[in-house]
Length: 277
Length: 268
Image (tube, chains in turn purple, orange):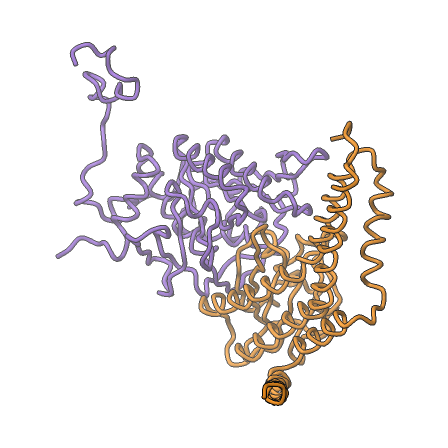
């Protein structure tokens, strides 16, 4: 043990003087929402929204859209990422997610990754390429209010979920609205979210019985929509951005917290996990 | 494969096997013809009545035209949509199709651009909508949408879940009707593999056409008569089916008694 060189490489962070560098968060016993994000508005955090695009001028987006890209397949069927200068939302769904996140974390920068294009056949590959791009771009939080049912994409998404985790990118993924596998929402490295029916955006719940770990506001949510509009919508798609918004607040106040620590903080501050007494 | 000529005996066996597959395929086609659509129709009918909705419809993706085509609809307000189609990335239905995520919206009309042109084409513009994907192992094959619950202004999570149950039924029906088409593709692949690269594609097509033409010709044989009758029975509504079942039971009973009667006479 005295000779550090004999330690396996993966033990190095835990050896000798290097241990001093492993500073860590205080114990969870003292966690509350004030500690977690009190005074934070998400400043310094970039949230990528992989969806149908974000309408740049929608009032609910508050001018925080810093970049828009679109992923499409080239003539060889390979996904390519290019800037979307018009910053379009082809449906309204991505703008809805952006509006929820901006409402909770008004200081966070928003990044739009549009993965819906006319060529439906490539959607799994396009989605994966968009997620890969968002990780490379250094997003601190990625909102995924969509998933792929394709078994063929299992491996690709599993690898991306791992890559995000190690790149300090927190993936927040809407659980599918009914049973059956969907990716990447069922991977352990992501924060998976379903809707609760508490009709309160401030309420979120931790489920100690995964795969779906968090419940958030997703029923009759007033959301932004295409064309500067607003409407009332229901779906897990709108629960995930609530958790993404809170995660952005936490990451802004505690930039040292890693993805699993952010997840732990979310669990510790959930409405069903408040300190006893 | 290309440097070995197929053994004539083996070729004969393969052709016989291919003929057997083609026979089953044709039988499946005759059985399923219209049956898949009948199930889809019953799904939208049931959705309208369960949700007490103004309309419900199913759109399936047609890869040959890259469009989502509305095949069936139910409800007084729903019929205008049948036969229309939209791009797979258009509007809410396109979103649900592409992402595989169901969605419920209230107050659709508050977005002036929300598929209005399309909705007006159908002569019915909805207030609220729930749309769920039809999924099979390969991914999303279409979308079921239910419009405007009469007793409520919005659809709930429970409604999404219920609609998804209907969507699963529809997806099963679609899969069944696709088995027949896949069989033809399989048949072609087997013939191609057996005949090798020497066989020009045209001759394979001709061979395949020969095999299937022969089968679909009007055949007075008892097999096709039986298949057609079974197909008709399968398309019958539950009341008719129950009547037919009762009739068959009576006939079977009668046949059994007359047969044992004959046996009785033969065995002294």
